[in-house]
Amino acid sequence: MMSLRRRADFKLAPRAAIALQERLRHEVSQVDQFKRIRTVAGVDAGFPAGGRKTRAAAVLFEFTSLEFIAARTAERKTTFPYVPGLLSFRELPAILDALAKLPEKPDLILCDGQGMAHPRRFGIACHLGWWLDCPTIGVGKSLLTGIHAAVGQHRGDWSPLRDGEEIIGAALRTRTDVKPVYVSSGHRVSLATAIKLVLACAPRFRLPEPIRHADHLASRR
Image (cartoon, rainbow, N blue to C red; front, side, top):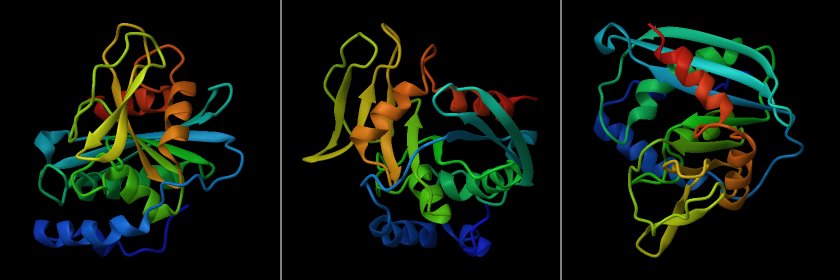
C-alpha cells in the first residue's frame, strides 16, 4: 500500500511546503481515471495531547452496500505546525500509516478536508491522491476558499464553488434541510463524478459513511 515517495517531503519549512504545493498542483488529474470501485475508504486525523500527537483513522467499506470491512488507526508525534492551507503536511504521515494497516488497498479514498477547493489547488485529497496515485475526493465540513450561490434545500442539490471564473468544487446538500458539505476533486476523479460518489456514500447522514466513521475514531479520546 505504501508509496515509495520520500517521507522527508513532509518535513519542510512552511515556505518550502507552499512551493511544493505550487509545483505538485500540476501533477494531479481532475479526469476520471479508475476502473470499477469495489471498496472505498475514509480518512481523518485528530490531535490529542494538546496537538503533540497525531491520531489518524482509515475505515474501509464495500462501496455499493456500504458494508463495513475494516478500521485501522495510527499515532505519530506531530512534527509540522498548524498552518492553514498546509494541513496535509501535518496530517498525512499518520494517515498513511493507518492506510497501510488496512487489509487491502481501497479503490477510492474520501478525505475529511479539501481537494482542489484550496488556495493553491492542492488540498489534502490532492496530496494523498498524488502520493498513492489513487483516486481521491475531498469532502470539507466548512468552506476554505471560493464562493457559491445558494444551494437548494433537498438532498442532491448543489451549487458550483468558484474562485473567480474557475470552478474548484461544489457545495453539495447530502441531507435535506441540513447544511451542505464542500466536495472537490482530489486526484483521478472529476468533479461531476465526485458529487455522485459522495452522495452514494452518504445515504443517511451529512457526512459520507467512511468519513463519518474515520472522524469518530480519529477524535476519540
